[in-house]
Image 1 (cartoon, helix red, strand yellow):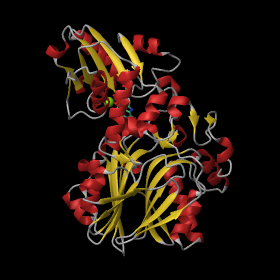
Image 2 (image 1 turned 90 degrees about the vertical axis):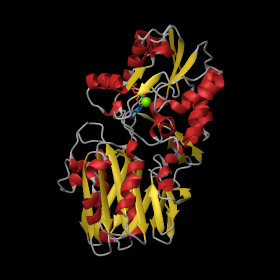
Image 3 (image 1 turned 180 degrees about the horizontal axis):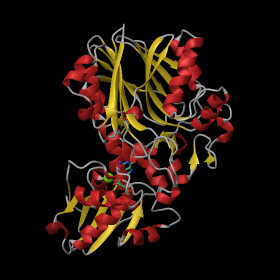
Image 4 (image 1 turned 45 degrees about the horizontal axis):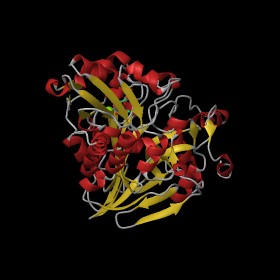
Length: 467
Ligand code: 5GP
Ligand code: MG
């Protein structure tokens, strides 16, 4: 099986060299993917690139960045669902075309990759092992043969894609940014002193001292120049489908996404959770780092003091990423250790952003009880995840979810907690501040914004026009 793409991207067009700026931009969104990193840079005559498995600072060094000469470029961090760490799966994905070299970085996941595979197979092309991003590149290369206008070639390419995609595209030395017609994955645009930047998250703009211009609209294509950024629009369905999990977990808290600061959303989640599930307890423990803002909101809302009862080792990577279940459990212990004096004989509310497989919370309850906690109550800033994500988050089968075919009481028992409450769907939507119709909650409700074989699709009547 080919790896799926759940990633982050940066693109810059400037009057000066971009490789260092891209490097630091990638460092800011390292949390979006720790398996591989890559960069392509053009200087008007040549495109140069470098990509490899590893963290951003492992993949690039001073010499490599010096060689990546040019004033325009794109860069990417990725993680995959399969745990394979091969360099050829790193982005950008490149191709040679009649318009010169092209390079594509992709965040998201296509839902029609199989159909595209069949289509190409019928044409006799040997594309058996291609990832969905490689399809995008092949289609775009074909369209560039047919049209010398890159924007037209891009929009004709997009017409063949279904699913989630935010893209950074380099065609020769021209930079383009694209957000899919539902706006599922994020992408924003900023103005620097000497150019423009596009990025998955706004903290990249902050680092580069760029002024935020906008989140790309669903279905927007932007040609990003050093001085001007020119917009085009492809047809979109009536409703957006912003991924709710970006707010709950995936984004940095300091990211401002589609008009909402993620930190504020998470605090509101915690406050609403406190109202929905009041608890008698001595302290609120955040699960660092991803549950911090939710816990702060819960502490505020419940007037129970917050305490740093779980200490995190900052040098351990995200546990979710480790493919083996045994490694994952060990990794929770490596990552978190309780402060005994804060735990002994205390009634504790533990707040985390989400429960997926249940590995993290099961271990946390276990170590708190072992350290002498009297009661452990678990509060979660996301409704139970029971359905797969086909649109770019690494959650693929129903069997892996601890909430699969279980109610809250059964899950509480499974993780050993004295009580467990998830925020309600209504509470979550209120906290995010976008109408439910403009969010993708596929993993919570099993109803998706795009057709997926064997799954329910929402708003089918309006979508038909576009698909
Ligand atoms: P679990 O241990 O239940 O499988 O996962 C829940 C924990 O992993 C939570 O602490 C949450 O912050 C984190 N988490 C949730 N979703 C993801 C994800 O897609 N990737 C990574 N790396 N971590 C996740
Ligand atoms: Mg976490």
